[in-house]
Length: 357
Image 1 (cartoon, rainbow, N blue to C red):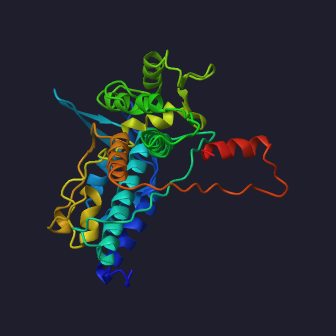
Image 2 (image 1 turned 30 degrees about the vertical axis):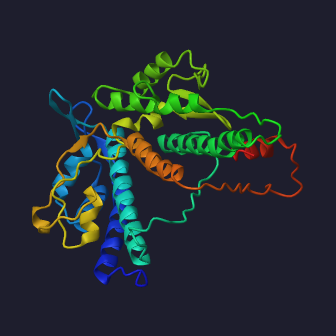
């Protein structure tokens, strides 16, 4: 960190943030006296709460409120509600993800500034590195976003390698055999179309305090019942499968519709003051000034801008840059696992297909 110009003060702040995230993950919740409410589980969790607040230089009581309460902001009204223990855990994890993400972005910007790239440069060389399509036994919302990005990348690859190249061959009257390729636009529409795509439905669910995993899943089943890319499992009320270009990927609305809490702005941390630019940048992406004493979190606020919107925005910026560039693709399939694996091995064939080979 010394080499890239991160000061001692900033390094200390980085370690404080990482330590705060670790302590935050140790906070547990128990049922409160009211229905669908929660409280800090025990003294051990209370200790981790206080340490987290101290490391982040915020008020412990305000941090607690941010974890166990939510403020739903709609065009008509502001609704405050308590969270049950499971929801509070989701709120805790969302805060940890948000802080980590902001810290990571801050570090990337700091390193980029240290490298000294001319911001006015008209010519750059960029490398877009992304893993292949993945499907696990339990797929989270993040996994859906990863596979969505893979779909976008595959379309971009098809457009440049197949469509544009073959149009050029036709224009120059080159004799060649036309190569057929699968257009995956229907998969992208299923996920990102506005209105009516999966991400749009996540946004819609965020607006209703009584939305559950089951109601969200039922909305998906009804909306996409005739979509050939959307598959409803027979023995589940919350799962669904998307037929991606590389194969089927199962998702569970219990993970994908952590839409209530796995959001970019789900915890609106206000007046997060610190003398460190690193700490100040963590909650809202911009430095603030002030003293630690008047720092407060305030109740958690569920915003309509969720993680899916963040994924769409990042994808849009990435592929916009790619579209303006001269693209060269490089496939890097991973070698077969184990000794004596053959290409006809079913698992290896599936894995290779997921790499778009």
